Image 1 (cartoon, rainbow, N blue to C red):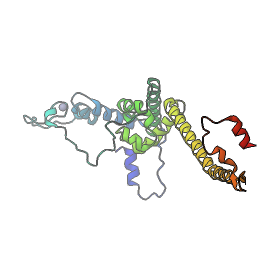
Image 2: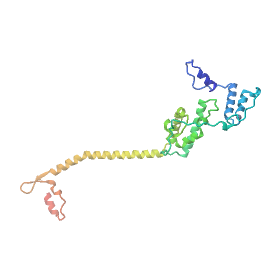
Image 3: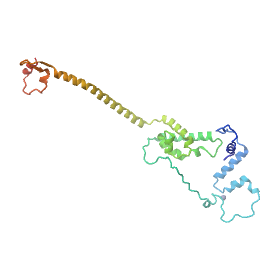
Image 4: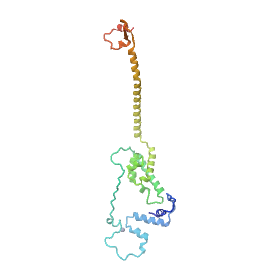
Length: 271
Ligand SMILES: [Zn+2]
């Protein structure tokens, strides 16, 4: 915990909330020194006691009169065997979705642009939320590995949920929405042509289905009309030739003409 954070945490009496962003005021010489030694302590590949002793000025102090016991631990760089790395098992499961899924195709060009955009974003966030910081830099905030995982799946990322399913990034809850927004803005400039073609086809099919439905509907409405007309024509009669009987006008059309029919006959019966 750095000094500013410690002060804020202990200051329970102050009812006004602490400002979220620390002002970019210049660091004191003391702060600069603290941070320089802390950084050296963290990143050194040599003995960690060196920056430690330098920081506390131990060289000018009286040393213990006893030598270090044989086999004593020094530090994780000098005697790594004596500083076993703990195995940490995370419980709770990840939301990462693995296995075969359909992924929207991402062109190389788009993946490249996504990489650039995300690199810019991580530096923007680092500069804004971690000013004067050389410990939390853009690269620490969002590693190249994370970006490499996101770039080829950029079209799948439509929400914080899909981002969490795509990549295990510990800042997703805090900065996920910014990442999603940035990606969506990028995608506006890179519409998914394949998807658009598929959707156009789908719309066309839906329209055709609608049209045939409308036709079927029209047919259904017309059918009773046809039937009524048919019925009416069938029922038309006229006085027949023999013994005052009536005959249906349509009678002669009710059977196929005989092959031997003579046209003169037809003429007579129609007149
Ligand atoms: Zn050491």
